Length: 138
Image 1 (cartoon, rainbow, N blue to C red):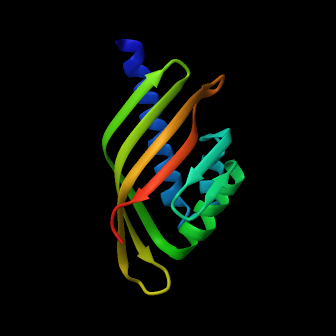
Image 2: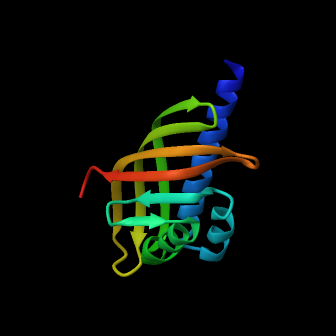
């Protein structure tokens, strides 16, 4: 059980680093890009409900421009994690609540949804291979 728990904690910490970097993209996109460089697998695919993003560069650009550039600040809050490990692959699901202050209007906005992720263990540690975000509120 110890190894499984250690692996699950490593995956949870990876997802927390993803959220922290995404949040940072609003105030310091250059630093966010540096942090995101060690998070995604080479064959990353992201589906955020607006088309697929293929590759680490595509998702990093999306997070640092389309998402981060529209907000003064953002914060992701992840809840009720479920992580299942099968060798060098794993899945993870989280409920997410995101708050942000919109740059153009100053409005405080929020997003509620679910992340369903696939992770791969690489020689340098766990990496996010796939993210599917489903928005539950408009």
